[in-house]
Image 1 (cartoon, rainbow, N blue to C red):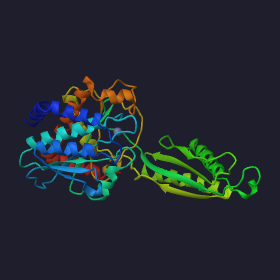
Image 2: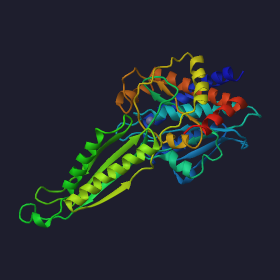
Image 3: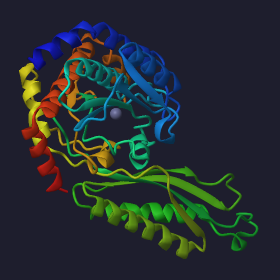
Image 4: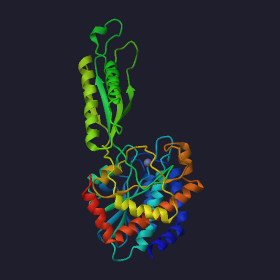
Length: 387
Ligand SMILES: [Zn+2]
């Protein structure tokens, strides 16, 4: 039976999977600079019988691995490997575990799947943190021959999925006119005043947001000297919402704040979207049910959703094909991601156990999907009837 074999095969390579997570943790690389990770993971996959293409979709640190002798049989499942780290803190989001689990699932499933049941691939997706690597790969058509994509994310709780938010990341700049702030202020136009006005404008929207709306950001430049009227000010802001339409509406309102401030202060404003915009996740209950059964088979308790909401580039992919993005605990509830404690937990005893569980759950769920036309039909039907 496939399930038992999957579990045995994952156990047999558990030390290798652990060594992947340790290597990545010790060699953290931030968005789009993951050259070591890309090399290391590709070489590892090759030793397990995969052909690997690097630099796919014009993304230098992306890769695609397919078992040698691969035939493009449908349906096709892709496991997603993230491996970018955070600046300064390293693998505080645990992407080292994501990569290791997806390698494990791909290697094991390629051995277990057999002749008549679709195909399996692994896609290395750089720059989840801010860079939107999956969006670039999606736009380059890398996921066109794929029917479902799967990955897990470490967390402080276990659940099969979560409603992430869509996001637009923008840079706001004001251009004024410099002048001596004391002797000739009448000749200046103050870009900092415009920024402060725009900031308070955005703040005044916040009271009226729906519960899923978010507007947050920072001022990154506010002038160069107190006796010079600032001719330049800049800030970075994110707007988020649970639907694409509300996200876009909030972006329009932020633009109005900036335009109003520019008009009032006699400055010019420029707004630029700096990262690929992220879509909210479109969940697939049929696929999550299959996943949840496998979590339960391994004795993993399902926790209540904590209600916390972030954003991820898997949202864009989820609008294109069905995905699963479960969360599995590596720390006790309340220990946040993007922290030193979370990073350290990725290679703790619990982190190791979760990694092995994750590889098994992903491989088992992909196996269920690829070997059950009934499940394939249910997943497709739900995908076509939801937004
Ligand atoms: Zn993450």
